[in-house]
Image (cartoon, rainbow over all chains, first blue to last red; front, side, top):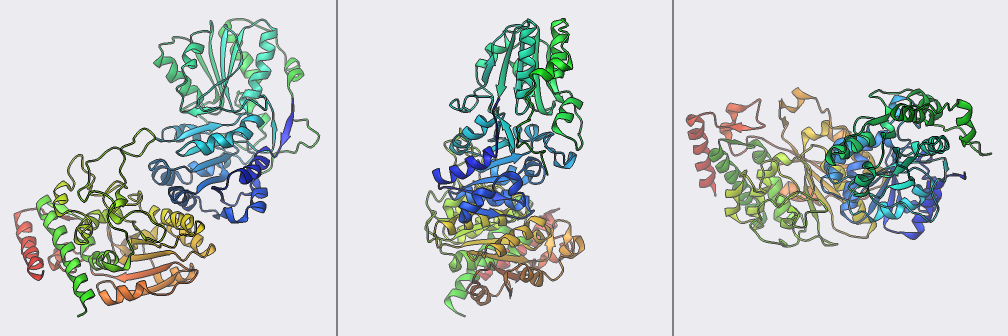
Length: 335
Length: 303
């Protein structure tokens, strides 16, 4: 698997040349959100707002009203927690095109609970007019810009930075409210989003070798969520459905799928992997995914429980397929 | 007295009259805000602001839904302040509790039909007590206090980057300077040397719980604003000449703040019975109504 670095940074700079009508706003996390190259190239289209997110979000609403599209760059957690009322009233209510790139979603930061956006989807999804996207790989990150720009209203993105795998074909761009079906199968249905998709790909490859027929779907649009293919997919699996997300299981992907199952009258078991209604703490992504049970091993355990089968998959087997960020220039995620 | 002054006095008197008339009918409303800010509205709408003619019907349409991709019928309230033009000014009412004052001012300015007031606070109307951006004269959503300034700064920044020359004028209340994000906005304007924003602050020293300094002391507001990079002028907020002159203050690379020292009982001295809690005037009984009816008669006589 190809591992790329600074994907957002490169694409942002490129997009600066392709499109003249947007500006970048940051709140003292320019380098941490891969906006430094853009700043260097387009100084007149870059605004540093200081550690003042409330002003930044309302100001972004004002800019958008007058035809300049702001691309907010800061940590996900500081967007919706620090400036929720401003997002609700200055951005979402008027339905203006403010594009919020929230970095380090979920447990992707060793910064601990203060830096971890664990309920952002739940919070932002309940806001009328809001679109929510989550990147799962380099192709999602690169191809998202046009989509984000073209949506007429506000967009909240769970953005990725640093070392990112390429899971999807470079020429297969992200599309609004369009799930990516990674594998077909009729025993089990797995929905994954964000960084969990890589985990699910590992788990599914082993489960398939063990004889389980698994349908695996990557979700990159959390809102809107109206694609009719979801109903078709939900009706297929024999044993049930697993969702896996880098977010609390309240209000995110698991909840969305649960709502759809009820809406479509699909009476099947649903296992929601993710943060189980808990805050987390500062540690590595790998450790926290294991600790909170939303890694490949947890998916396999739940698949065994739902199917009533034991596949005897060991940690070693998983390690065999695990394509760790062993890239020569892989660095630990800093703050 | 100059013609300008006479006109503004008549305008301000009309604002107080209309607001009090409504409040007596409705058994309550935001009165002291009209008393303190009537001259500020009169000067802004009477000549300080360079506004285009009303860009739509003078009687507002009924509520047509909130903004969304699916609502093609949405009508913004700013058209009463004129079309958006490169050279035209904008007006933003930051404390939306002054909505009734704004509607009365639009009527005085000939921008809203007098009979529209019958829709005020009625179900299905856009003339809401605390207006939204679909309400006449409203440009942005400002009911949650403090957000008006930052939105105005964003609009002004976008306009500056496009080379537009029009200014953005705001009315703010002194209580709003208790809010952190207001100072964040001043920081930003200072950093980016923004000089197309002008703010009239109604320093009436009143807020919902009572006197501003009893709720949370503001300290030396003028000095604080100067420290944050603003050009600050202090005026008697009922002095027409002074208000007009203040708007002319040069403010190169800085926002202009006009601190208007005002009297929240001006023109309606009977409000003295509510002194200490002037935010919302309630007609508790017939005696209240009779007392304020006398005040209304005096205001009408002064026309």
